[in-house]
Length: 142
Image (tube, rainbow, N blue to C red; front, top):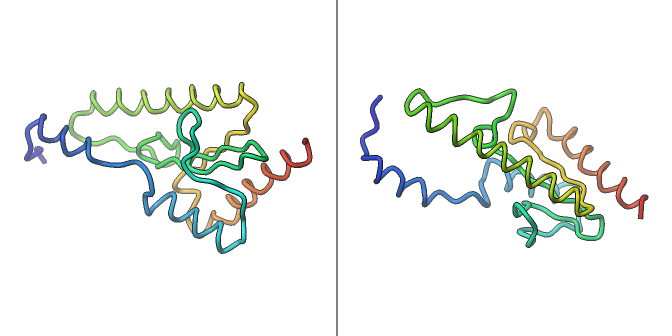
């Protein structure tokens, strides 16, 4: 189906889309943390890439990545229109994610990236265990 907006109007609309507090990702993880009494995290820390959750004492930065926007290998999809634009856009996102993770690791942070799909009911327990394991590992190293 053809886009009903001009490219300029579509750009204006997309520019207003915010990438924080999304119900499908950050809010799900917040509920999971609270339900399992996982504490010590802070949101929107002033670090490269603006991690979604940070445990400063353990130096763990967690990013919740949407499957579409960050190129999940399991659920990657490509819109049928403007394919060249989307391929370039998503490739830039992936490259930026790698650069930010590398920068944080060089600064002594443990970086966790959680896919949106890892927050499904079927996979959330394993995701929570992965996060707790990283936190415990950093606590015992200190």
